[in-house]
Amino acid sequence: MDFANLLASAGSITWEIIVFIILIGILVAVHEFGHFIVAKMVGVGVIKFSIGFGKVICKRAFGDTVYQICWIPLGGYVRLVGDVPDPITGTEPTDSAVRNNDEVEVNDDPDMTPAIKAMLKDRSRWFIEKGFWAKTAIVFAGPFFNLVLAFIVYLFTTAFYGEASLKDEPIIGEVTAESPAAAAGLIAEDKVLSINDNIISEWTRLAELIHQSGGNLLKLRVLRNGEEMSFTVQPALGDIENIETAKKESFYFIGIKRKELFDRKFIPLMEVPVSAFNRTVFFTAKTYYGLWQMVTGQVSSRNLAGPIFIFKEAGRQANKGLEYFLHFLAILSVSLAVINLLPIPILDGGHILFFTLEALVGEISMRKKEMAQQVGLALILALMVFVIHNDISNRWRRTGQIEWKDKVKQTAPQQTAGD
Image (spheres, rainbow, N blue to C red):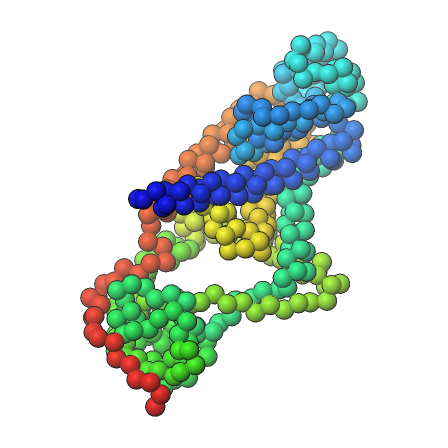
């Protein structure tokens, strides 16, 4: 690699890092702000609002809360007063044991301003002193604000870019190297007009005729730079991995990909909120359905992606434009909301599950809660290892790429102009 390419590569990585930090920072800040603002609204004290983990970059105390940004941007937290177990109020067997413990000792943590110390001794500000609905609202607010973020993003993109839908036009966007199409002389931007005298107006029809060709010669008539031209192509049998099932399927291909073109429809401003709401609901339902399909084995779990995928995809989408980046942000925000609401201990959904069980059957001991939290942590860590493994292995998968089973016949291009 020469020096110029090295600089270009370094610049690309730097850009991807910046985009990734912005993306994750927005998602985390919105999620934690949801917990924070609702806690304040129902009278629960917030000791610390943190974006990121690890070593603190900067922090500042305002009123009875310390706000900070840390070096590791993969998350954040809101530390509530009286959230059991709590290193300040002390670990007790049950929530009620903490409530009945009148000896609350405040340590010499430098973050403990006089305002925070006074708040710690005010039991009316304790999380565990609140009822079922208040605690549930605080925990639910994080995922809910992520859904609100998606809604706001869709409001913006729909208002400024309109509703976009992929066109089904038979225009070639890419020709695979060493493919039948490349051998025949087809190039990107060619618009296919007919195949064996069958008029083509949609890409789906074009793909159908190629897949069902049986490997027989096809005569393609295309429009190139305003001129009609004819090409003879012989499809070859190849394997391609189904993205959903991760299983290989065999079809006849010629090695072309569709050009992404979008129809944009601008709608009246009064209809934009309805459209944004519908899109948020649609992607939320789609995410839940996708998880259900994975659990039931209908879709391969290899489709689960982790931080490495997000890192690369964030940069790729940002390079395509603001609209693409915002759409990716909205999809991730919905995914974060859905995952956090799963009834797994340590996640927001797990906390809500415990609140509900305690409301129905009575108080659960801290020992049982801690054991459940440990199980939940183990599950999350195992999931993280799995998705990182997916990210690494998927880097080398040939998803979307054809593995030719038949030898591609490298015949000389056959073409005629006009007719």
